[in-house]
Image (cartoon, rainbow, N blue to C red; front, top):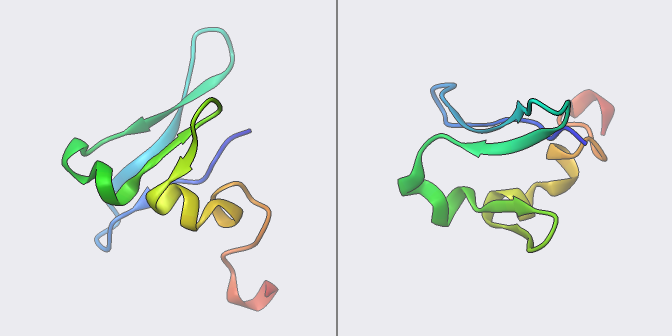
Length: 69
């Protein structure tokens, strides 16, 4: 499953999915110093930080569009 991007207030990408050579993808975190806030997404460890708090939005279960709520 491809998760949505996490952006800062200026639109800079903090986390996003990046394609693998085998056709899959992995989560890439662009700013290591923000790991405590951005958190993590892992099949083995689960989610933490923003990845956990907004999991429904990042995974597409809930829409981020206010008109669709």
